[in-house]
Length: 233
Ligand code: IPE
Ligand code: IPE
Ligand code: MG
Image 1 (cartoon, helix red, strand yellow):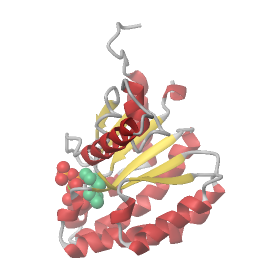
Image 2 (tube, helix red, strand yellow):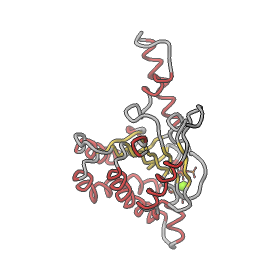
Image 3 (cartoon, helix red, strand yellow):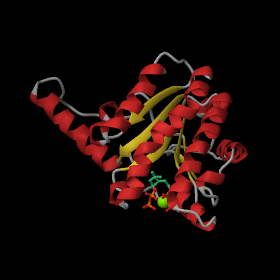
Image 4 (cartoon, protein in one colour):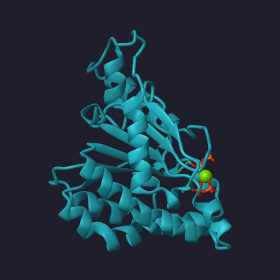
């Protein structure tokens, strides 16, 4: 069944609440959340998952206090300083979706460096959704499509074409979507791509989500009956 598990996406939620429960600042939660990305990415890679897309910063997260936003923009540098070697050793390929050009130049540079350095790696794609919002992605896709129609490159839109214009065009639909910290919503993440994803909501906040918890989610996924609108096999 694992061979049908191509694309896992995670809404890494609950960093702030976890930090508060430890009487610490929210940024403490983000720091530990980023450390946890390392553990979960390495484990997912070992399991043979092809694409792991992580919601790291949404188009709506700019609404947060400046101090928190600035910290989140600096986290990629901290993360790659600590873990890039391990990602390389494990043949993990770093990629990004989202509005690259709106990120702070330094953040962009750090991400671009990681993408460039790992571009020939052959195992799991580790995709960071940074300044990503699904509605925003759909608007961008529509603009590009309109441009291509104007230039005579496209007409007669079909579903597969829409997927092609999205930022996830290389990754395909999500098979399993996990959200931590007991919130049961999607928060503008991969709306098109989760049309038939299995959804799993986990109580634990992201910094406490372990490799074993990922195994448990995958076990649950394997026990689900994905019908895609058809009948039970
Ligand atoms: C998720 O944790 C990380 C980001 C959104 C960047 P939160 O920061 O949303 O943590 P809670 O939900 O407030 O606990
Ligand atoms: C979703 O979490 C975004 C990320 C995990 C990056 P939020 O904490 O921003 O979502 P809401 O506000 O609770 O819906
Ligand atoms: Mg949250």
